[in-house]
Image (cartoon, rainbow, N blue to C red; front, side):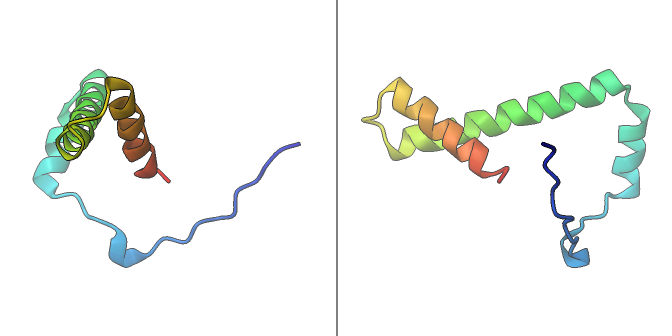
Length: 78
């Protein structure tokens, strides 16, 4: 059975426009370079989430910190 998702409406007030200079820089990158930028940004966000959890809960084990980091990262996508 195929699941269909309800169409999402886009709020024009929440759409950000990319600056022309930034767009030109991104267009000059190869697909591999753009993908590397995305992976680097994700890795930075993950380190930031982990650091925040570690700072808020210094008594937690590495396993607890991993779980909290995963929760924080997945919550951002829901």
